[in-house]
Image 1 (cartoon, rainbow, N blue to C red):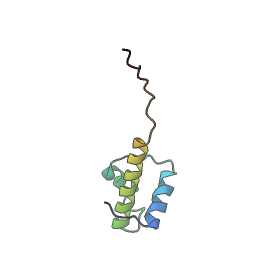
Image 2: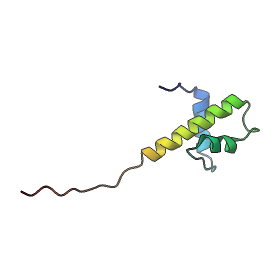
Image 3: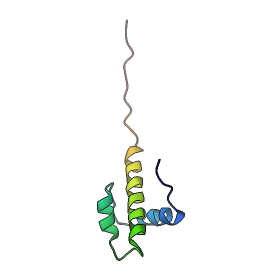
Image 4: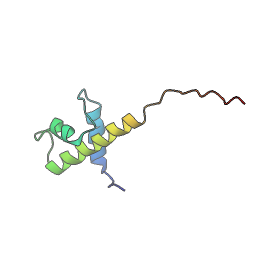
Length: 75
């Protein structure tokens, strides 16, 4: 099981996701997007980048799947 993220990390990540910036599922890319200057500390930046990656992965998983129809077996 993973660690529980603080409310600060969750709020910051959700605010950043609501901006026009496009994030990905990759932690390294999100870390570069956040950059060194936007966050007050390196550990906080890494936690936010990781949480954003997790949220992006959850978005991909929760997309609806096309409905598949299966014909009944005829005997």
